[in-house]
Image (cartoon, rainbow, N blue to C red; front, side, top):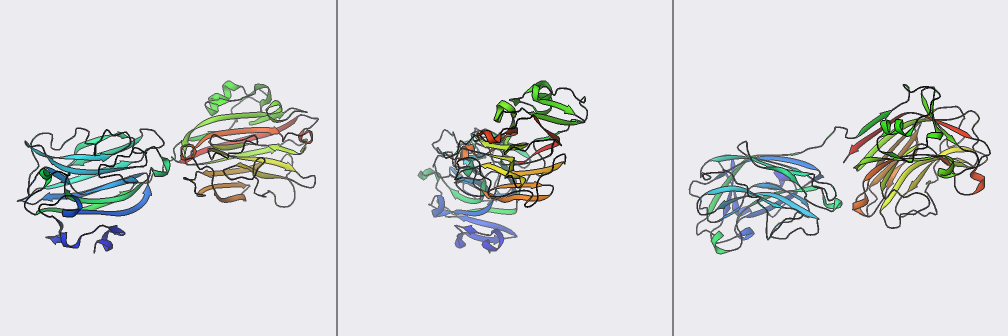
Length: 463
């Protein structure tokens, strides 16, 4: 029955679970603590960053409070630490509820495992319900819990417990520091006495009743960071200065005023003759709020007299962790980048992906042998629409993703292992690179070149 209702439930004790007047009655056996006398049951839930639950709970009219114990439903994060096993490795936590008898009154208190907790066992943050007076036997209490994961080492997680609509706890928290262990993945159902000392025991069996459980995963569909830029309102043939760029992009670095101009409502970038890389073009970067998934799109056009030379880097892209580029292979698993280049084989000119990721063969960016167009060649003075999507992977798993479309045609669309260091897994940078190179002279041109951009959109999809 429990598996039918809960799913992949573990730790169930048939002899201690009974239906009573439409509720679930759990027996806590006399003279026993923890799982020896009660119920420690867990159900896996889909890994998520936010969950909430509600349930009703009632203590039997003859219930013996003893010192206290764990009661009801809760959540596990990562390794789901409990049992005075402090999560000093930053890899787990749990949100539960307990009842406690201090000798003067009986109350609910939060019982929480999280990174940085003082110990020796669960944190209660000095909170209690009711704030005065005692819990009543034979009375139903409605419990609401909300939990949100944090990111990295940030205290941007959250926990909330309400009893009968009154706040027991509501505050930010740092559950974990290991991003591969940050997700909520367990529904707990714990009903037992303890503590470990005899004062937690009772010499009579006790009964606690439950009803109306509701568990909900909260998925945010709201876009987080979003930026849209076009240059329609800028004055034709005026320099697009670093001040203007900061106004549009934000914290942009590496801007070159002398190489950026407004041209008929678009942004024109100059590539100087006989120069490669940043010496002849633009290598600008803008910080992004850290996130696990981003997408962007932009329009790009090569001038009608553009000299293809051998090729170069073009347009906008995304950086992960240490944002490796420049033939600096990310052998430490701490960074990666997604960019685009144009390339001239002398028989054909095409776009290809230019990607840094863990496990790449080198010596420089990976192209995955992809090209657009697959036949024919890029055209001068023609606008191309580029779409990019990047999703971080977790741990050592190739469960990240990379996708690039040009004019709606797929250039690349596949899973990828960007990093192996979870502290460096998040996307954090918008790149804008427009230059020739490579390093050898055949990448150079003896004429200035112009590339035009318009209609940039950048969207954060998830934290």
